[in-house]
Image (cartoon, rainbow, N blue to C red; front, side, top):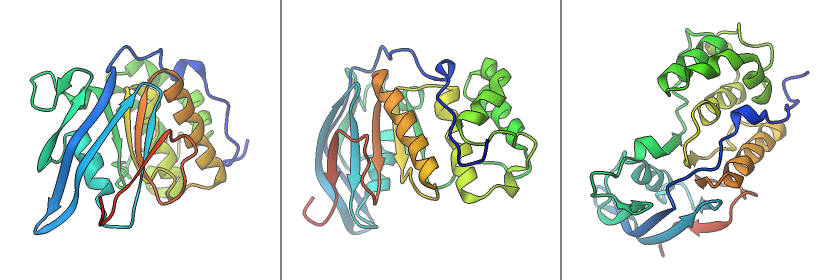
Length: 226
């Protein structure tokens, strides 16, 4: 199997139907950087099986909005609710509900690909998945590369490896910052396949992009008029 040949999804990497949260609600969100207002008045509701695509020019606030949802950046104004828990409630714990994949892949160059999967499985609380390394690598299009140092991977291969945590420890909300970046056609198909299975299980996705996302059920364009 060549690198660009994508394996069929393995069912043991796909989540059972998500029980919660029932929805993701953004209400009246605003964000500024210094004296510059990036956006305001952002209100959107997602239910299980729905995906929101964020479009807009560079600097329009797409990444900032994702970081707000992830709990990494406070909202200037507005609230974020997961299910029935508002962002100011004690039960608001995005770290337990959310996977955020940004531009930085967070991979360690000194580790091998296989070691990375074992490390990530333990980090994300899924140590049993480490025994399925070969199957997961085949799914990601990295078959027979368990021995290879992460530092020797191409940008596209690193992007594929960064997706592993989505399979190792399923969480109901995926926040993806430019998920198609550095991926070839097969890699983009992999994103579409994983997203489709995630949504079918009742998960939700918010993803920024400069290209159309086929799995999106809603769109929001950030810009001067937002």
